[in-house]
Image (cartoon, rainbow, N blue to C red; front, side):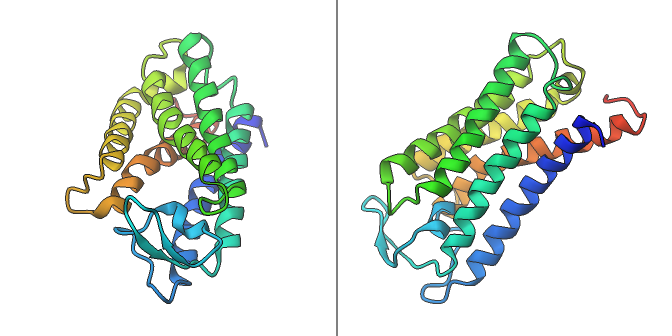
Length: 215
């Protein structure tokens, strides 16, 4: 298996693991029931039970929090491995290099989020969120400007769309504007575009390695 195929597999696994953990750990909640609209992703990893967050108080009790925190760490490791292994495929030039570093920073954010649950180390978890929100979405927007990388050039439209969606999601989430999907739902608008982007990149890498063009 080539480095690019391993990278693609890492990215696809990262997305599948994140989504599966969100569903499975959320289903374990009893009192209260987990709400994708009301609760943040981070609430799934909170260690204790009780009312959490002074700005938007909500009852949190995640019995399978170790599973979620382990998933956060694993997602970060898989994202980082994918970036490192696909270094050549991601191309050369300043934009491609910045894309790699920004995506790696977001990967570090996932690892930190799992290692520092919000109710254990709020400042550490906030740093993790900043890395995921800001670096992950910025990386996609920068990727759209990479002219010397066939993979990134082929994904230019998706990079703009997903990066812009995530950036708007971050702004609305921080402003606590939910546009009908809840603040927790808006957080997912901020987070999920990066995972969608690496999924698309992984699928394109697999397609390319089967002899089909990237574009």
